Amino acid sequence: MKLRPLYDKIVVERLEEKEEKTPSGIIIPDTAKEKPQLGKVVAVGPGKLLDNGELKPLSVKEGDVVLFNKYAGNEVEIEGKIYLVMSEDEVLAVVEDYSSLIGGEVRWQQRQLSTTRKQGQN
Image 1 (cartoon, rainbow, N blue to C red):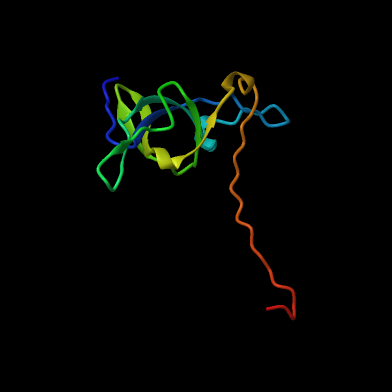
Image 2 (tube, helix red, strand yellow):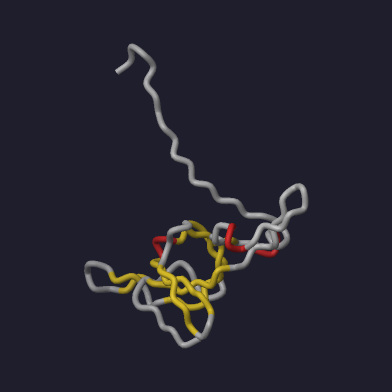
């Protein structure tokens, strides 16, 4: 792949999840699954451009496995493969020990918590 991201952009290849089955043994097709939110960084830009004109190096590097929001980045297809181009700011975390996740599951759920006021309190 010959793609060079600019500034604080990174290129991520999604990591495929293992085949999923229901408790009764029915295989869930790829079209019914959510896209994985785990990917391998395949290219990084030179850094974030600061207000003073300096480039701040990125925290992620090629080869890192990262966790990102399900709506992060823009999908691009290059040579038949789908990649995500995103800002480093869209990365939620770097997975330090990806080998421990192989064969396991990574579930990411965003929950919006609502707060309620007790009656009589301001």
